Image (tube, rainbow, N blue to C red; front, side):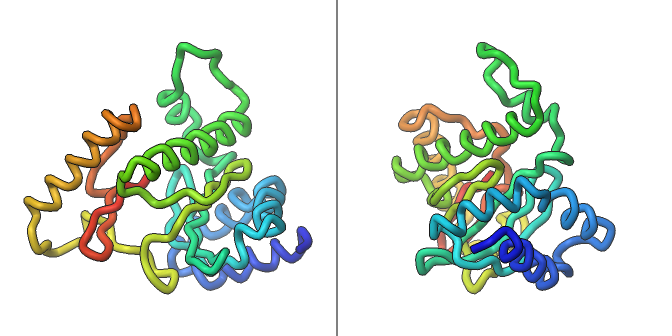
Length: 206
């Protein structure tokens, strides 16, 4: 797999997912998210056999872009943290200020991706409902895809009805408890915008 092969696959994924990205964001995503270093990070993951293909863009936000893909016989979510257009201050706010502050934007984003991977692994190993992390390279975190045929599971905020809202609430609160007690972590921004619902169960993301 070559650098040019990855560029071509990214181009195809962007074309397939163009409708999921606002017109005014398309150029920005293409030029600023998929910069040379991000392409090289994708190349590492392809050459390691972690990713076999990219399908399309699932979502595009201020801090990251998520693509659906495949690898190892399963569907993948490929989360690419924006290096040049992310809110730098937001990342700094979440860092542990007992340690020296990293002021290099790229280095900070790479550290953030590693931290996200480690936290997902820690939670997944303790039975908390999060996507299972697969690998990390630079600003890219690869995890299992929650959904089917490259169509993501719905966000909790988009559900019109639930069989038992009380049971779901209790299950989410139990995961919040386990996250703190077993993993030593606290989700800093838990809401209906980062909980998805799939096969009668919640999944905590972001």
